[in-house]
Amino acid sequence: MAEVFISWASPDKAAVDELAERLEVSGIKYWISSRDMRPGEDPRDRVQKEIQDAKVAAFLLSDTAADREWIIRELDWCVFAKKIVLPAAGPLCQPADEIAIRLSPALVSFDACSYPLKLSILAALEKKRRKGVFDSMRHPLEAVIPVEQRRRAIVALTVVTGILGAVLANIGRSLPTDRAKQGILSFELAGDPIIASASLKSWDAARRAAAQTSLSIDYAFLLCYSTTLALACVAASSLFRRSFLTTVGLYLAWGSWLAGLFDALENYALLRILQGATLNAVPEDFAVSMARVCALAKFGLIFAALTYIAAAGFYDAFGDRFPLARNR
Image 1 (cartoon, rainbow, N blue to C red):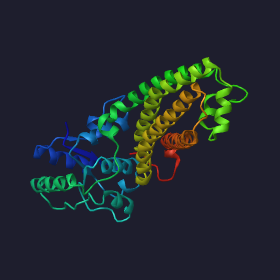
Image 2 (cartoon, rainbow, N blue to C red):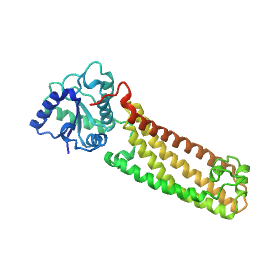
Image 3 (cartoon, one colour):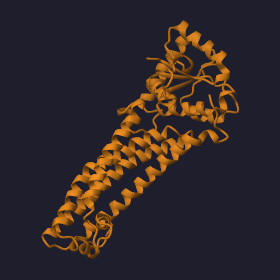
Image 4 (tube, one colour):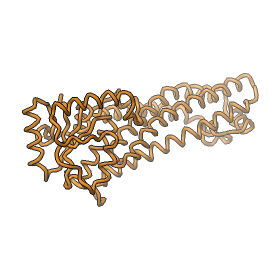
């Protein structure tokens, strides 16, 4: 496992070769794309994995690197992975205010420092980092699922979510009536005891049993879709160059789990109403209102997460057409 991740722009190859030679002499293991990237690998997944595994990231911050989109992305990934970021050679380029902002507060000037001294400073910075100096928005899935496994995990979760969704759709086919035109959705969004009661009265015993079965299975469905969306938001957050958009993605990852919680509360309220209907009781105002509020909050959070994921995919696919986008 490499101790140092090296980020560089192709015109700076002579400088990066010199840096690599100095690291070799010092006995420090490093990862560099020109040597260690294997044919056929996804560059983004491999780079994110190496950043996650490395103790420190060294950036060759030349004027050439300042306008490289890939360098900016690597800086973002390093900062959000809470890695120590060092200028590896030469002064920071003056025009690159954007780079300087990304490095703060992890940036330390190491000009003229020997490598043993640099490692001592790294140890001190690491101690400060653990005390929360470099705290930023995080999500548990970042630690639980490594970068290189996230795509497979998203695909697997999406398949399971799709299967459960298909089961629910099949059960719900019998629920639409004249009083509940959208089936269970009309019941969820009723918001008024009279409307909810009308929906219930339009369902016979078999339909009510189907609605209860659907709501029970929905507990498994909400766990799957909320985690799928959360992981997709975490993965999508690494695609944006702007750090505030990365933070938005992590907030939405938490929001996806919150959508699942709202869904669970909504199911509880609807099951309570259904149980009351079995006893011929009038639906409670609180339960009906709670189901509607939770359903609207759930749908809002899901829509926001899906919009963010779609925007990240669009940016990843077409970002190289924007003026600031550059190849390495």
